[in-house]
Image 1 (cartoon, chains in turn orange, blue):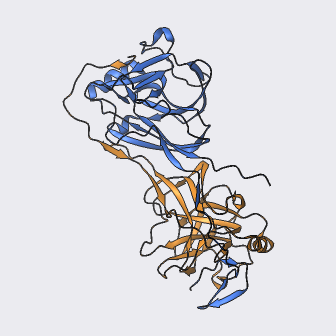
Image 2 (image 1 turned 90 degrees about the horizontal axis):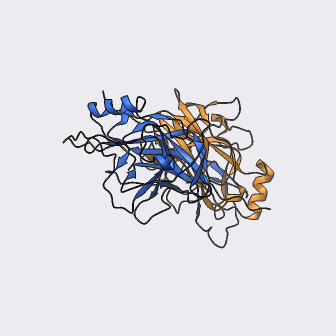
Length: 216
Length: 234
């Protein structure tokens, strides 16, 4: 073999340590999908993140420093009539992107990294994963959220009250779907005071932690 | 507050203080649960697989290589579909200080490697079409370490994932059966020439991978995510 071989043989075994690993932040079970067409609801014109799933409050917070290399969304399949009505109100193309939110005081959140928007119409009814060309740096404790400038059928409804998500909507207009509250362009900060119980946003993010050098 | 605060297409319904706009039309059947695109590890190796150092310490030097076979499997390091490489892993041996000094003195300094995507041509010709930044490895000896890529690498179905080592890397598992083998970018007449620089670096992107080394495995892998299927034409 064309190998550089060293004849020194040491009797010490190498400690088998593994560093960095791939995890799915907010992993969604294979059968989880948004309510459409049966109970058809959609996210519209906002940025949101899942605050709790059952007792777990940290499902969408980075467990360590690392990178988001892909994201996944489980899309409902709105029927023709639902689609037409969503399009009329919120735009022809269903769109979303994953963003990284830095946590400030009192539910203040700032976008510090974002993936390109993806058109979703062609993937309705699927759980679809998008690899990211320029992966997103993320620090321990930062949130992964979903930005929806138009609309997206990615809400699982009818869950227990301990499951909840938060949005970037104004506190006085948590149910106001008309204004644009998505964190887009130069608008990077919002207070996420609006809390919605019994619902899950059907997205997740593929996270890889940064490698950890050996201790010196 | 209760409710989704999402929007539906149907008439507003007030429930528990929240407006839920739900579609009144329920479809006759549920959506098929189709999953598109998925993550896999190209060249996945067991957690205890690592370069041979410090016992029988060997290293890959100054070349680009790829694993041609692992047992009967010839496609372990070929992309199964179009997609992107989002990270790579390397199972590093842990050379002792004397071994490290030996390699550093002969092969240009600190251990380094990077992942490359090789497009196959005719008769073992391979061309680098994408490459990750070179990583210094010294700090990770003894680990299986994974490097996420800031800029992920595009890969097409059938292309190979290779390892470029401009200096040296303790990333060889040895003493395996003869149906496990790897190939290198070294010249056909110098398959055992460890000192000449054969790594595909800079503007040097093409080599013929004639040199075949049996019973050894390069201990690297790549995290692959397939591209979502192209939207149907409307």
